[in-house]
Image 1 (cartoon, rainbow, N blue to C red):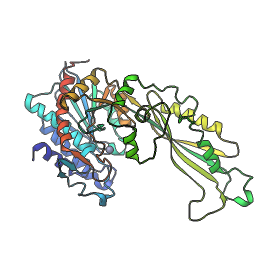
Image 2 (cartoon, helix red, strand yellow):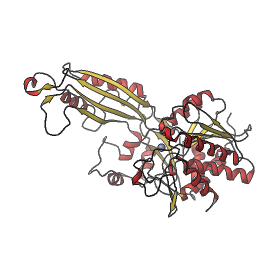
Image 3 (cartoon, rainbow, N blue to C red):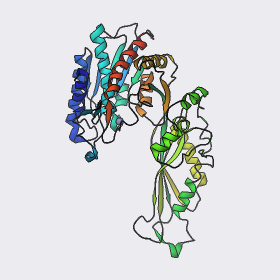
Image 4 (cartoon, protein in one colour):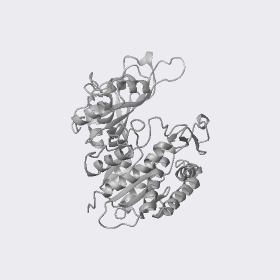
Length: 448
Ligand SMILES: [Zn+2]
């Protein structure tokens, strides 16, 4: 077996589950392994303790006249439950048909190690890199990166860079190089409707007091209009319209309505009229109900007017919507449609701003050239993603740098699920991609 694959297997054997205190020493040992690896390839590496799991930072010798690239990744992984659904133990990596199966194989050990080994190859061949490089590899990505923001703020000067590269997103299809340039943001809200002080007998009081579930259902039904648009006044005010080149490019991708229908198992897709399924999930905002409750939930029937009902709402946001502003508008809408026969309580939850980076800017173009060369001349596809990765906006804002999302994960990688896997083909492509990327960015010359 070749040396890079052996390194990958070693890395995957650490049960670095960040959420589980029982694995704290495994997480720490994994950080030590990463740092030693970075030292061994010729970088200056340090393990920085935080209030939680450590952050590993490594650099080459920085020289003026070269751009500075920060490569972000994480060495922590998700828990493995339900472990009985794994075909092999999650921390005993197995290779079959060129695919390695283990927790962390794709997310994110395989991807970040590919970057590390790409750098190793370049240093071994040339004695140096074409850029000033910073590796920032944390151990809390899977639990919300709670100590990263402080770390970035406290070390802003030593982490100063021109561009950030992250391989933690997906490829549209195998061998189809993919540059993601936008992510949706998110805002969450819980709504609670309270009527009578306690559940009431529906025979004695039915027809006299408002039923919180009925009221809630009516309120929630006002969130969308018949065309599938969010019917909150001003909701779309700051939305950046999809550009024509994006619509043209996405129509050519090998995923569309049929594939999404098959993946989801729904009889028919649904959503805002006037947009394709990809446009709706990547570049249009939504209002979703994630949970609803109230009243009697047990066997048989119970004739009550419940005291309360609640629902959990979330909104996926697109450039340039602001989560706080959107929530203000939503709250104003909900209050305007709530009758005076009940009380309404609104509680905001977590939120994150949307992300957009120009894929045809200086660094985006360099990334496209690197992707093309890595994948034998295949033209990279430029996509947005519907999900939200708050650390990406954090990196952009606190480091004041563009962020390139060069994903190597395949749609069936099973990240966070049993039997997570990563094709060695993608691992080796990642190693090549790192070399191409640093060369292309280096060829752009110094910025500051
Ligand atoms: Zn993850």
